[in-house]
Image 1 (cartoon, rainbow, N blue to C red):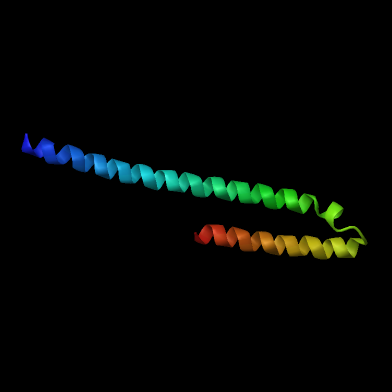
Image 2: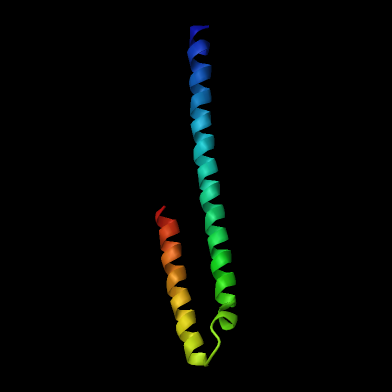
Amino acid sequence: MTAAAFGVPLALVVLNRVAVVQAEAVEVRAGLRLAMRVVGDFAASVPRLVPGPAARLDDAAAGLLALERVAQAALKDS
């Protein structure tokens, strides 16, 4: 009886911790998906945001790709 009195609450604490870790992992993956979608939408809107010759658009696109890489690295590190 004493083992159950200590074992059950301890098991509940451990299971709660596992659930919290899983929830945090799900949030990180959701954040990464959202960031990728936002960057993609922003990159798709570059031609409307930066009117002018194609060379300027290429420079803007290169800058966005660099920004995307930085964002991906930051999300992986967190």
